[in-house]
Image 1 (cartoon, rainbow, N blue to C red):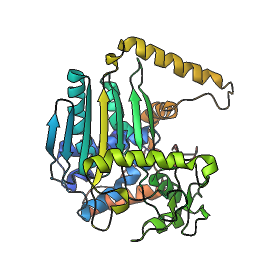
Image 2 (image 1 turned 90 degrees about the vertical axis):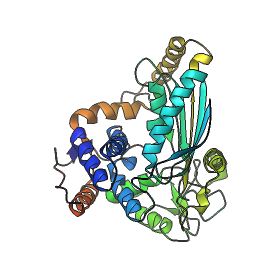
Image 3 (image 1 turned 30 degrees about the vertical axis):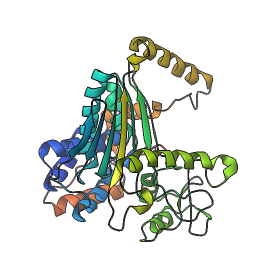
Length: 367
């Protein structure tokens, strides 16, 4: 089904306000979720609402809590998030880094004691929209099974990179595992099997059932899990995906002096974030750099001469989805619709109205 984006954003903001956030804070959180849905990244959109409300109820996310700066220089900042919304502290950190980078050329931010911040690309895009290059990353609960192991140790550990252009920024946003956990959740809600070799069970065998994967990862002692980029076999380069995830762990948990992904859960809920922002004008005139980037991307798109599957670069699908969904409304599945209404009823809010019933073109999502 489709829901008008502005209406959905207002509806979700009201839910977070009832959960204890201010109106301004609720609007920021809702905006990040709707932005993901508009771009076709439903794994990080409103389907995550139930997860957030559960974390609030369990005290893992604390409305009304406020971060504080632990250490700061002209080009860096270390922040304790105090378990507030990951979206709120991430937006604040980017605002600080953008100011520092405009003044000093570069700025790095690390956040400890944080919570899930949604899609990493949202924050990298903030920097690019300010004419800067942005990188954002986070560790997560243990999901990724290292090569030759049977239990997860690292998180999906996504990172995003954004570079400004004269139109929409070039954005790459992806997990360092084959997929994020949210992709598995979306498949389950839509009653679909895993289409690729994304995960293994406790015995090291490829698992295609999303319900089984999520069940393994919901245990106190997790077993099985999501594979690194490159899949199960070293011959396919899985050590590279594992290495990338390990690098993100160093930039987040290690620098923040927080819990490593393997130690999250069981009383530890301190996710860590990393952000880097720099001014590309340090190396050349921004307009020339933007023109050169646009030229390179155009050349890549032109390589694939197949009208049925035109050449694409990272971010193209998201931009296409954004334009379509901004007009037609965002797509949500029946399960998420029911979850949202259940949460709304519990908080004394009206049910969510449907703009258009039934989306026929399948999952509006990317890997």
